[in-house]
Image 1 (cartoon, rainbow, N blue to C red):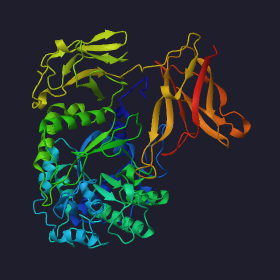
Image 2: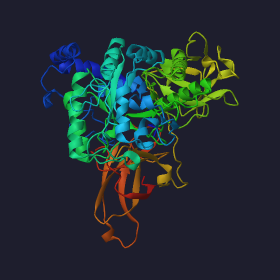
Image 3: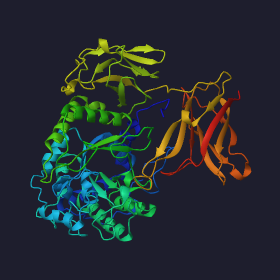
Image 4: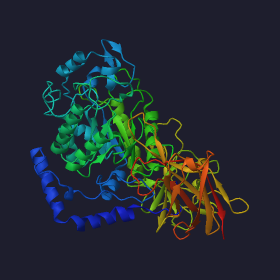
Length: 627
């Protein structure tokens, strides 16, 4: 939901955190840097295990937001830097790349090609024999990193181990790895980690917690919802320690699939943070133990998201691993598709990670390389509107999308409005400059103020690109308009009007819904933790009556009004013969913190951890002015 006073967060959290961090860690930073250089030099973690006192405190969020599990998580500077990157490369590569979606001369079109072992299905011993042919002589880590940089990507994540249990890194836990079990005899993860370090890209690893090669874990279960046996848990923890100890700084670790218990999820997360406290852990470690939420494959949220999040995308929805018979056509359309997805995700505050699936010999599919190069060409001009920005403060825009930087709003024009005006509803009380097309700051246009916000006349804007009917000119696709501002950015949210007597009858359907993601497993549905309403309240004080479906026991929730917390102790169903109960409380409007609309929220009792649910079903909130 939109805040009625929208401020650029990095003014405090990025620059301020850096200054505070420099003062707070002092000589310890130098020591950590020295240890890091030793890691690179020796390829192993040379220092002693990090103690609890060495771990920076996790980020503290506002109390009306979910908190990280106690003692876990990167600090605010790490999270800000992670969110600033916006765009990265996913690499799915392994034995399945040799198969290429084929087995015994037949296409396997069931499921993703990287899961061909289970989808074909293939007898395990026959699949394992692929290791005898795994010799990706065309895998060029530096070339892949160069491609990522040309695409405008800021980080790379590679499948260190996928569900088939084959490892791209040398591990003491099993010889089923690229170094000890193939004619290639090289550590692919190490090659890529070192190439990223040389080029200044952040590096991460994908790690499947299920393992079809591990004894007792080699049975495919629908939805990959395999329980993790104690032996597998120990195996995974041992491999996590190797990955976090031998490959330098790991920016993020991308856990995936399985159905671990809450204790197992905590064990995996704590193992990671004990060795590298600032590694960002994906939500697919499950049971709400991640540092960032992960949407479903090729998915995007349809509601507001408060926590850091990422959208994983494949070139084609049918597969992530290489598929030799994949139809690859309409290159310009695929470039435009992924630029649009990138913009859409970033405008909602997320990061976008786009996959490539190299062939069995390690070479990048030319089509996929061309897609990345096309995105990179667009980002060469428009990258300022992507990197280091935050989500748009507008509910919806009829022309496209927006992001916000420290001193500018960036407007992505996906379609020209009929009146050739870019309308920004609710933008008010802000010192605005003249608008211009990104890349052409010398040619500006004056904005126009109206009762609902401001407008930018596109027909008066110089250097506007001509329409490209063929769709091949990336420069004409989704051009960006820059609207500079000084000081704080203020946006009046769309608000609910009062009844003639000044009262409000608020329904859950009118609220913004905030959801928990990445619960017990991939198929576990998201759950509601917060409802938020913005209302056009004229009075200063109201009587609020919250109606709900009672539970068998008393229940606590919090009502928040303009940031002020009002704890509610809701009666149980025993006290009511009817299905609907209610509780009434007096609340006060705070125009100092929320001058444009009154903000109401319902949450679990604060402080609450990630995964906490709003414990009761809300029927309505009635607000009546008292003065």
